Image (cartoon, rainbow, N blue to C red):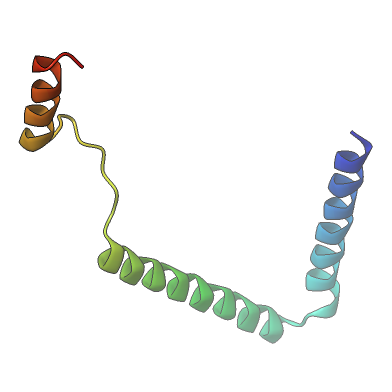
Length: 81
């Protein structure tokens, strides 16, 4: 439990420091550049995700087994398994 608490405190301190640095240390131009960089990174991530999905496809659960699977299961049942 203390490890979890220590990690949460660390994350909270880091988030607070990042927010303070953003608000206090960056001027308006730097804030806009940071926002643009974040948006460009997000667009790149989405495009890469689309490309990978196109290449690999998506795994979908079958509602019913294929006919050959059904036939094989029936054959096994016929011989007693």
